[in-house]
Structures are given as C-alpha cells and as structure tokens.
Length: 361
Image (tube, rainbow, N blue to C red):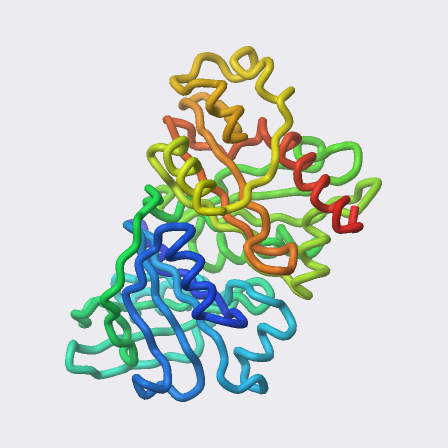
C-alpha cells in the first residue's frame, strides 16, 4: 500500500498573548526574527492584532485581543501567553480530510475557503491536547506569502542563525500521554519514534514520562510529556498548574552553529537555564570527542549528548512570559537523531532550582 502524504511540514506557530506588539518586538530585537506581516483594524481585521515574524524556515505569529471578552482574551486570561495553533501545511486538503476520515479518529472542523486576488486559500482545523489546535493549510491554489487580512511590513532584523523548527513539545496530564500518542498514530498516521519512562527522566525530587511521535521521515516531530510521581512537584505538573490545561511546553529551534547563536542571543538579553561547572569536568569522558571548545561550552552553559548517529548540543531558555510555562530550546545536531536523554538529569536540576526560587518545588 502506498504511504499516505497527509502533511508537509509545520508551517507556522501562533501564540495568543497579552500584547502582540511586545512579543513581536522581543522576537525581533532579542531573537532576530524579521516582522513580515501585520493584521489589525487598519487592515480591516476588527477583533485582533497579529504580527507575523520569520527567520529562515521558522514562522511565528503573535496575536492579541481587542476585546477582553473575546475567545482570544479568554484564552490569555486562563492560560497566560501561550501557543494556540501549530499549523501544518498539506498538499491537498480534500485528500488529507479523506485520509483522516478513513482512520475514524480525528474530525476536521471549521472548514473554510477564502477566495482572494492571489487565489484560493483553504483551511480546516484539528483539535489536540488542551485548547491547542492544528490548522490544516492548503496553499496549492494560493500565491502570496501572507494570509488574507495582512499587510506587508518593511522591517529588518539581525538574524541569530535559527534555521527551522526541530520539534515542538506538549505537556499533558498524568495518564493522558498514551491516549494522545495513540491519537497522533492511529488518527493522523504518525509513528512513534522513541519513549522515555520515569526511571530515565527523573531526579530525587521529580520525574516525567515522554513519548515522541513523528511524521514523514521526521519532517514533523512532536514529543508529548506527562508528569510522574516524585517526592516533589514535577516540572510538568508546575506547567499544568500555571497554564491551567495541557499545552505546548517548548519549541526546539535548530541552528548550525549553536556557539555563535547562543552567544548572540545572550548578548541581546535572552536568559538561559544555568548548568553547574561540574557538568563539564568529565564531559568528554561521557560523550566522547567533540569538535567544540569545552571551555566555550562551559562559558555558555551548552549541554552535549551523543547517540549511535552522532552528537547534539542544546540549551534551554528560561520561560519567555511571566508564567513559568513556555520556553525555547536551541539545538544543533551533528548527526544525532535523539533528544538529549543524557542531559535530562542536568536539565531537571536546573529547572528544579528555578522551581525552588518560585516556591513551587
């Protein structure tokens, strides 16, 4: 049987935030994303303000409300600033819907066809964990870089070397990871890539379980986490408590020079989790020879892990908004196809130290 091609890639990620202008400014000035589009009352959009920013293959959309009683305002009130929509572009919306219907699990809703001067734009929507959705975007008959309702922005930004989405991580309640993994596998044709249990991802205080699903030979990768019982509160449970539902925990952004990227991000004020000096004392003994200067990695607090395919370098920001919910991972892959399992304990200790400061451990 010929393999279905229901989805191409993650086209964009849309955040619902208290101030789209401020989130756009931070990502432009601190992270090097170029504003390319604006929608709001000036463009005929009456219920929201949105900015589209891009850097290489990464497109981010920041949307805020004009009426606090609107669904956008209610989303921000309940969750704080967070991700509403992970949009996936599809080769043919009808074929994608037919493929999903044959599986009998996922129901596509809110079908829409917009006819414009640039052609026809077709969309549908698939619900997933919490209030997060996947918009299915069919651009096959549409010839413009921006959606209808947006005007182009003539803005500049100094890029920081971020290239594309590597993976997007969701947090769900205890006992709900497997049902959501099955939703993606049975309902949407994803494959399970890897899994981690609470014996692999734990410290003396907290633990989590995680499974990773992928589509199209790793074109789309979605790890899904759930909290596990520990002596104190899991970082996943802290997220769920502050977000008031399941949601996207973090986005991993790929770079081909993490030392240069992180140096520039830090210079611009992006804050990262701290890794203690002791992590670097026996680094090469743990992961083998690497091409980077270990003292430079120590200075920047970049983590390293290796699998049978090679090694990777990664680092995690502190939460981007006021609530301890969403953050970014910066990752460089030198052959490795894994997700840094060898760094989980060091990462957890850094996160737990932040939780301790907040009084939530």
